[in-house]
Image (tube, rainbow, N blue to C red):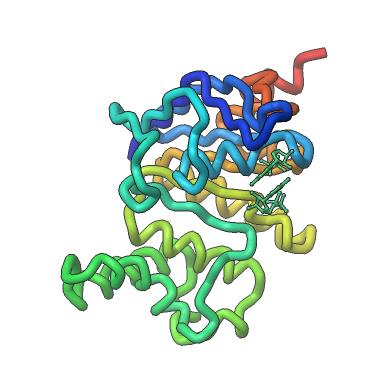
Length: 228
Ligand code: ADP
Ligand code: ADP
């Protein structure tokens, strides 16, 4: 686990207004920060720069004590949970969760893989579904498999990009509760992107409001609510 520290981060795609404009934000180790704002305000771009899928035009990004601007995504030890889950349809739940460990060749014995997968699946209450394929799971269960894949890697932070926007309202409510509980249990640094006000006001320790690439406000959900 680690802190994430952004110092004057800029992303300029073309000649126009920067997609992300001088964002500075320090996220503490174990903190849960919600990044909220209207469509097109730069949320995904900022998240993608943190995870390393997008180059940073200027500014400094640190994970823990380390400047990671030039580090490849896989060397940043972060886990991104995507909106569309990005599960492998031909693999079982077990194999989907185990997949990141199998990529790290020779690093884990079969026993170690098994232990990690079972611990993650029990945490996520997926024990009874380990032999199923993603097509035979509900949306919420698929979401949990995607999180399981992040958990087994023991990543330094979770990054969520609108993870609940494909779910119906009821499931979204359940998953909100579940993600909040899980984040607290794991104590893992989390950045969560959403345009949903309810998620912003109920999930995190702090809410960062982005508008046209500019960080307008950073406050506790309560603090944000109390402002005029
Ligand atoms: P959000 O996630 O808040 O909806 P984005 O980060 O996707 O916003 O986009 C921020 C701005 O940057 C938008 O104006 C978008 O059109 C622009 N943008 C995003 N990705 C690219 C890209 N690859 N090339 C050019 N412009 C982009
Ligand atoms: P999201 O639903 O996450 O906001 P978008 O539909 O905005 O995603 O973007 C999908 C992909 O297209 C992303 O990889 C984003 O970087 C890219 N993209 C977004 N806007 C532009 C743009 N104006 N020019 C080029 N690529 C873009």
